[in-house]
Length: 204
Image (tube, helix red, strand yellow):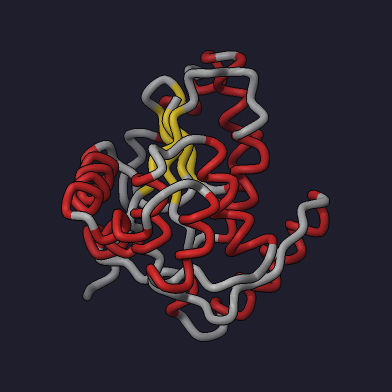
């Protein structure tokens, strides 16, 4: 399984609490740039749409409280997550590094939008902050993102289970059901949906 995420996403933070507890060592966290994914699909993020932005923030806070997960929003949102993503890659995307960066931003409500704001965390992880701006680190993040887009990822978080993509924290139970029983996706009605005709298309 591969788990695609971006630190800009509070829903990624919420799903990470579940993903990191899976009894499956084959789950691979993959940091990607959500903004590039949106651009590839010609979409806006929920935080870019007035009204939807405020609802999304309230909804994620409600979900966190319902799931018993501490959550404090960072000083500003949306923010530039590239430094946090690159720090994660510089730290080899270990579960400990993913955990620490998510906690820094979403549990403790700290800024994670630059090399400077993340320097104390980088030092705590044993990473030279200069590696955040290192060319190979940037290249690795671009490669992750391009591979995710090629795989069909259109949002974060996304959990890939046996080649099927499950988007969103609220789809976690669906993904686990399909993991436990592949026939969940194999019944006739599920299969029919893949070829369902488009009835109308909005003009751009």
